[in-house]
Amino acid sequence: MGSWYTLNMPKILIPIAIITVIAGIGVGYLLSRSPTSSLSKTSTTITKTANQAGVTDTKTFSDKATGTLEKGGLDGEGTHKLIRPGGVDQTVYLVSSIVDLDEYVGKKIEINGQTLRAQHVGWLMDVGRLTVVQ
Image (cartoon, rainbow, N blue to C red; front, side, top):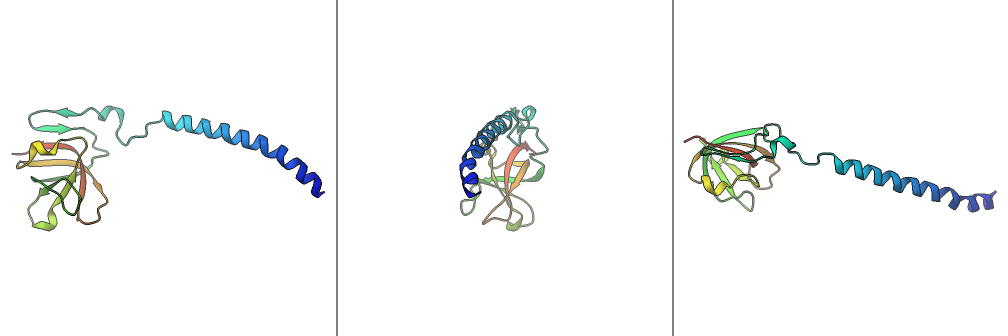
Protein backbone atom coordinates (compact mmCIF):
# COMPACT_ATOMS: atom_id res chain seq x y z
CA MET A 1 0.00 0.00 0.00
CA GLY A 2 2.85 2.40 0.77
CA SER A 3 4.44 1.81 -2.66
CA TRP A 4 1.17 2.53 -4.54
CA TYR A 5 0.81 5.82 -2.69
CA THR A 6 4.42 6.78 -3.40
CA LEU A 7 4.23 5.87 -7.11
CA ASN A 8 0.91 7.63 -7.84
CA MET A 9 1.55 10.83 -5.87
CA PRO A 10 3.62 12.54 -8.63
CA LYS A 11 0.98 11.55 -11.20
CA ILE A 12 -1.69 13.30 -9.12
CA LEU A 13 0.39 16.37 -8.27
CA ILE A 14 1.31 17.23 -11.88
CA PRO A 15 -2.30 17.85 -13.07
CA ILE A 16 -3.10 19.72 -9.84
CA ALA A 17 -0.06 21.96 -10.34
CA ILE A 18 -1.02 22.65 -13.98
CA ILE A 19 -4.61 23.52 -13.02
CA THR A 20 -3.36 25.80 -10.23
CA VAL A 21 -1.02 27.68 -12.59
CA ILE A 22 -3.76 28.13 -15.22
CA ALA A 23 -6.24 29.32 -12.57
CA GLY A 24 -3.66 31.80 -11.22
CA ILE A 25 -3.03 33.22 -14.68
CA GLY A 26 -6.78 33.56 -15.25
CA VAL A 27 -7.38 35.32 -11.94
CA GLY A 28 -4.42 37.63 -12.54
CA TYR A 29 -5.75 38.53 -15.97
CA LEU A 30 -9.22 39.29 -14.60
CA LEU A 31 -7.81 41.44 -11.78
CA SER A 32 -5.63 43.39 -14.21
CA ARG A 33 -8.70 44.24 -16.29
CA SER A 34 -10.70 45.60 -13.33
CA PRO A 35 -10.24 49.18 -12.10
CA THR A 36 -7.57 49.12 -9.42
CA SER A 37 -7.50 52.82 -8.62
CA SER A 38 -9.76 54.36 -6.02
CA LEU A 39 -10.48 57.09 -8.55
CA SER A 40 -13.14 56.20 -11.10
CA LYS A 41 -12.42 56.77 -14.79
CA THR A 42 -14.78 59.74 -14.95
CA SER A 43 -13.19 61.52 -12.00
CA THR A 44 -9.53 61.26 -12.97
CA THR A 45 -9.82 64.35 -15.17
CA ILE A 46 -8.09 67.16 -13.34
CA THR A 47 -9.75 70.53 -13.82
CA LYS A 48 -8.33 73.93 -13.04
CA THR A 49 -10.10 77.30 -13.11
CA ALA A 50 -9.35 80.63 -11.47
CA ASN A 51 -10.89 79.50 -8.17
CA GLN A 52 -10.84 75.68 -8.27
CA ALA A 53 -8.43 72.85 -8.98
CA GLY A 54 -8.61 69.07 -8.72
CA VAL A 55 -11.06 66.27 -9.40
CA THR A 56 -14.79 65.97 -8.74
CA ASP A 57 -14.56 62.59 -7.00
CA THR A 58 -16.56 63.16 -3.81
CA LYS A 59 -16.56 59.48 -2.86
CA THR A 60 -12.81 59.19 -2.47
CA PHE A 61 -12.28 62.78 -1.36
CA SER A 62 -15.21 63.12 1.02
CA ASP A 63 -13.53 64.94 3.93
CA LYS A 64 -13.72 68.75 3.98
CA ALA A 65 -11.89 71.54 5.75
CA THR A 66 -11.56 75.30 5.34
CA GLY A 67 -8.70 77.54 6.38
CA THR A 68 -5.62 79.46 5.26
CA LEU A 69 -2.94 77.48 3.44
CA GLU A 70 0.67 77.67 4.62
CA LYS A 71 3.75 75.88 3.35
CA GLY A 72 5.44 73.25 5.52
CA GLY A 73 4.52 70.05 7.32
CA LEU A 74 5.48 68.64 10.71
CA ASP A 75 7.97 65.84 11.41
CA GLY A 76 7.96 64.74 7.77
CA GLU A 77 4.17 64.59 7.48
CA GLY A 78 2.55 66.89 4.97
CA THR A 79 4.04 69.40 2.58
CA HIS A 80 1.58 72.12 3.59
CA LYS A 81 -0.82 72.89 6.41
CA LEU A 82 -4.28 74.37 6.62
CA ILE A 83 -4.57 76.82 9.51
CA ARG A 84 -8.09 76.77 10.94
CA PRO A 85 -9.76 78.73 13.75
CA GLY A 86 -9.47 77.15 17.17
CA GLY A 87 -5.72 76.85 17.61
CA VAL A 88 -2.88 74.55 16.66
CA ASP A 89 -4.82 71.35 17.37
CA GLN A 90 -7.23 72.27 14.51
CA THR A 91 -4.45 72.36 11.90
CA VAL A 92 -4.80 69.96 8.97
CA TYR A 93 -1.53 68.77 7.42
CA LEU A 94 -1.76 68.24 3.68
CA VAL A 95 -0.26 66.36 0.77
CA SER A 96 -1.53 66.20 -2.81
CA SER A 97 -0.48 64.48 -5.99
CA ILE A 98 -3.39 66.12 -7.82
CA VAL A 99 -3.26 69.82 -6.91
CA ASP A 100 -0.15 72.02 -6.82
CA LEU A 101 -0.65 73.42 -3.34
CA ASP A 102 2.22 75.92 -3.72
CA GLU A 103 0.00 78.04 -6.00
CA TYR A 104 -2.46 78.67 -3.16
CA VAL A 105 -0.17 79.49 -0.22
CA GLY A 106 -1.54 82.45 1.76
CA LYS A 107 -5.08 82.04 0.45
CA LYS A 108 -8.21 80.99 2.32
CA ILE A 109 -9.35 77.75 0.74
CA GLU A 110 -11.82 74.92 1.14
CA ILE A 111 -10.44 71.47 0.44
CA ASN A 112 -11.96 68.11 -0.30
CA GLY A 113 -9.63 65.30 0.61
CA GLN A 114 -9.11 61.86 2.02
CA THR A 115 -7.87 61.47 5.58
CA LEU A 116 -4.66 59.45 5.83
CA ARG A 117 -3.11 57.65 8.78
CA ALA A 118 -0.62 59.93 10.51
CA GLN A 119 2.19 59.21 12.95
CA HIS A 120 2.95 62.69 14.31
CA VAL A 121 0.08 65.01 13.40
CA GLY A 122 -3.56 65.05 14.45
CA TRP A 123 -5.00 65.22 10.93
CA LEU A 124 -3.25 64.38 7.65
CA MET A 125 -5.18 64.72 4.42
CA ASP A 126 -4.59 63.98 0.73
CA VAL A 127 -6.16 66.89 -1.16
CA GLY A 128 -8.21 65.95 -4.22
CA ARG A 129 -9.99 69.25 -4.81
CA LEU A 130 -9.38 72.82 -3.72
CA THR A 131 -11.63 75.90 -3.92
CA VAL A 132 -10.40 79.42 -3.19
CA VAL A 133 -12.79 81.07 -0.73
CA GLN A 134 -11.13 84.53 -0.57
